[in-house]
Length: 294
Image (tube, rainbow, N blue to C red; front, top):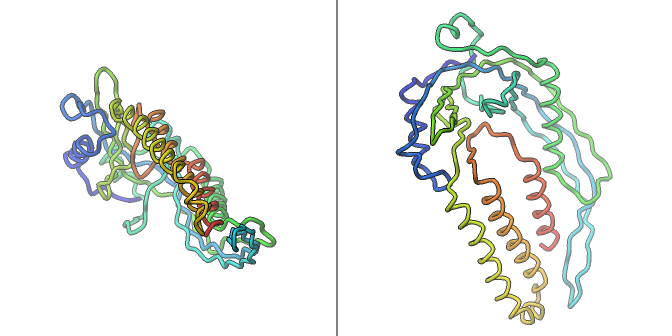
């Protein structure tokens, strides 16, 4: 178990500071939000620590310009993998609370004393198998390492996990619920370090509209300006590479504006949010394209 260091008043202060921070949330939150309840709870998380080791061999393709022509250069790559992994995953259904991981690095983890925890707040029981959750965490860790070592063609790959240690840890979170314009939202505050684990609030509609319009207008302005001087770019030594990179940047700008408008109606923030694997794949793909022209 991890004991709480934050009391109810300090947890409420964290929520108030979050209301005042940033422009993505509805600005009326600071005045109209009304607190309903706040309670301390311990949630079960499976912690898996391991050492990931292995080798990845393959081919990396890059674009090189020689004279007026671009040619593909294939380079053999040999990568040694050696990484310490420390991951957590909830052992209970956390769909209602939105926290999918906690950071236990540096925390004082003590032997479990359920009587002590029940005297301080609520204690949620695990509903998932410890070994199944630990196995899923190990698979996710290996998959993340494989994505981090992306190659155009893999000729040999061997990854393994060593010295795996698994534990069930009860972690404290303050659950703060508030009402805003007839709807109830909640914020979960890390009761150990005072950070924001998960927070949900209505979005700023003016910011959403400005993000979409501004991103599209900026991309169109830069794109049409560059097209007017496309001849000069193509005649330069690295002109094609420059145009390709600029095109990716403009596409990324439009995607950012669309995502802010599409998903900005409700703002979700916090260190416990689940990672967006689709976003990670998009970023990795863009990085690969840029690397090919370097």
